[in-house]
Image (tube, rainbow, N blue to C red):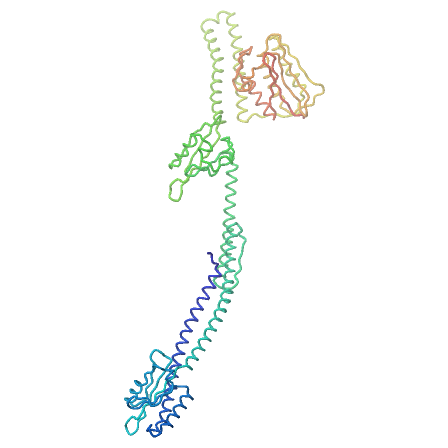
Length: 579
């Protein structure tokens, strides 16, 4: 059963009052009884002396019997007491009141008074309220008789009963008053305690603006003041902590690296969106689950288990088509033992690809540079070996060497252009330029080459084209790269078209051919550096033209589009904004 503070305080208050009243009542009754008994003894002694003095004048008893009996009866009636007259032998000469004190030791107390020849008083056996007194009647040195009086204590008992009734009434009145006062005082205290409880509950729920007012300048009032100070300090600390948590949460949510926090049971406690994206899992599907349930790959679980052993782990993890660099650090508790692990994931796929591309680039560039250099070295050695003496051989070798030098120069220029693009040092001279003039210039430049290759070249230009914003020389370089690629895939009698078409707020420029086209499986790789399709008519070239063109176009804020069908030619195009 649940008791309230108010009930406990009321019961305590009533208990204190009851104990105090009982103690006071007992003390008062005891002292009253003692006083009444003492007064009763004194009164009884006075009465027995008075009777003895008056009866003594009528002794001897035999001469004045009627008068003595009448006088004794009068005393008994007036004072409401029991009276006996006993001679020296212990014989009762007069008795009045035997029914009230049937066991009174009359003979005994009479003999004691006669022997001592003085007043004797004592309580009747077993009855503290019953008193019996004796006074010897002496004459000429001898005791003629003894007057014995007894009091039943009715008056004393009446006084004690009345005192008891008054004390009982006072007790119940005090009990009721104390109960009411106890309830009032406990209600006041309980009200303040409830306010403190409500304030504590409000703080537990995050309401740090709660303030309490003490009803009285007592300990509870001081507690309310201390509570307000605590609430203010807690509010300040909580606000600072919340701000710090928001900052940390913002950092965790927005950081590019994936973050996963797990406890010692490998249960995921925190995961940010970046980690969920890297693992291709929803955030809701990761939190609260074990790593085995949420991820299920030993490649991530093993480093975490190692970190729980107290060691940091850094290694690369392959997850699908992604390469992830993971770093697992133990979270140490108060005892210094690991209680969890923080796992940082970083997507290094692009970095790995770049490293691989750099290795491939160096390999391909070395190969492409080695070929013309080896050819030139071979021709030089042949010429030095005597071939220079034959004018026909010498001229043919020099012509071939000139072609290889041009090829080497173009390769070096392409590599230099790629280096500028990669480093961001390529500066574009953007200006309003006529799209018609760009196409006409490209047709003019490639016409001799197309004629020598027995390929028809033509321009397809819409009328009244607006100017476009571009770097004229770089766009011409892109279109020349498209033409070079078209020429490699075109047989004799084919056709290459350089076109400029009006679009929505832009002008589309491009080159189309009637060559062999591009196979679907090769389409994703045609813009890779040093890549050359397998069925090109002309195998010469380093495979850098389309990759350079792609980056040039992207530097203008556009992108290259490709349309091709095997055996039906290909079209490369891009769009430039109208000036």
